[in-house]
Image (cartoon, rainbow, N blue to C red; front, side, top):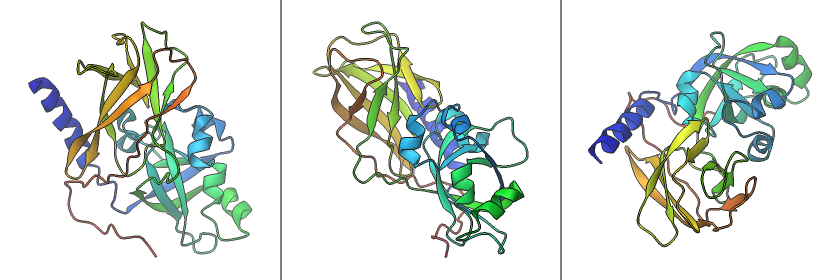
Length: 261
């Protein structure tokens, strides 16, 4: 338990140093095909289009955070007054750009053109790369609970791989446990890659999950009861019955975290 607490606190500390809520200055480019981002390191596949409306983004290592940043929402706007709107666009992080040293983001074509003033989408696309400012914002899925998708690589009852969809708020999932629905004998899951968590110590029967998410200046447990039936199937999405709305408070220097105008 002591090791877990130290590990957990280190995760929170690493998240806190990023100051995501602050306004950052950088550059952004775009991919002409959204599939490049939807099939990216987070592992969302075609589901990325459902959770983002096609407004996808790949982010540098400080935003991807070894997968903890998957599903994070950002407001981004470009700074060229001839083409760019003041509202900008909102994106969901779906890919890792650790190899990129030119921009903090590579956006989907739809998201990139979404930064333009009305009628100037084509002009902004011709620029290819633009100066931007961005900040992390809470994700809002008002009519959608946190969902659990069983990955195709799973094998009932020996191996279980899942990913979480529609993660609301401004949080990161930093730990996941699984147990039989009527048991308190929890087993930890490991982050396999991106948004995917897995275990080869799968409890028998229906399954419940508990998650540690960043919240406030600390973290908190979220308990999702009776999520997977005993005959869970690969490729199926299950409703967790709960929503995440917390906002993590970062222990970094004060900054302007108001909504830009």
